[in-house]
Length: 88
Image (cartoon, rainbow, N blue to C red; front, side, top):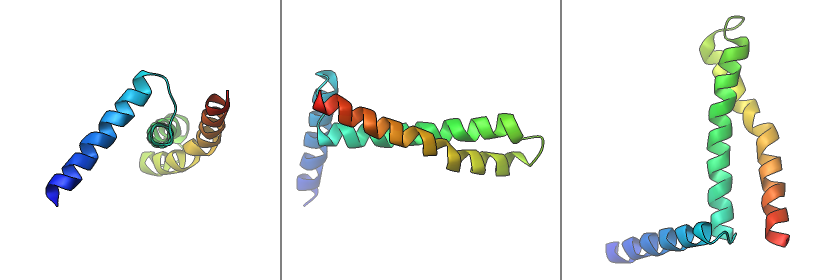
């Protein structure tokens, strides 16, 4: 059972790295890029929230609010751009 899981993980990561290196967007690479962009937008939103509202409200609260609102503008744009790149 462990060999089957290990083989699946290795095969999936190999297919993902090949599709990203050849600039071919597959469902696996699109989901991976969407997750990566979500994580980076959460981090950027938290940093932006601290910089903009850290003095007015506390830094942890500003980071939480920024982390929630950061992906609101980024994820739809990334999703649409991945669809456009896949179609054309």
